Image (tube, rainbow, N blue to C red; front, side, top):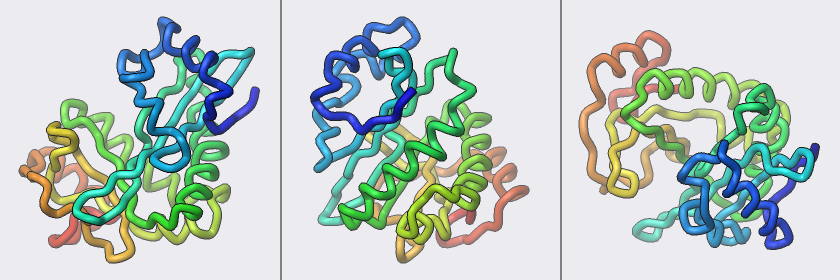
Length: 208
């Protein structure tokens, strides 16, 4: 088993992954997977390979709006069901160190993650896991640890590619860096559940 950063040398292996019945629809072609972004300049893709097959992927992409640059991650996270036991190892030991080394070279300090509003249970699980991961991951470089000192669950739902999403973010100012995006209210049930776990900042959201 090995973990690699994607280059065109792995294109054939990636196409084999596209055709695997366990691969999600959004990851099933170069167009849907957005392979063209993972060139090191506009994005990065990490892959876990076992027995000459890709069994886990995670990517990050650079997003620039109104002159402000950020990184969205994970962009296409997927761990094959029969390798689900490797999920934490894949993210904590392999993906995060590579990601934050790349962010350091790109000098990007605004980072965010989005989550589908249709699955509130999964979102809450992700928030709790994210809070543990960013505090306890000894594999991150110093730059990564500095970025992860304070994350927020944003106080509103935001539009991401014309789709309403829950948002986690971190920035040097602690402020959401794309405030012009369309926003809507977080459901009361979700905000109540978040408030049971995390401290609330009225200007930004829940501190994780």
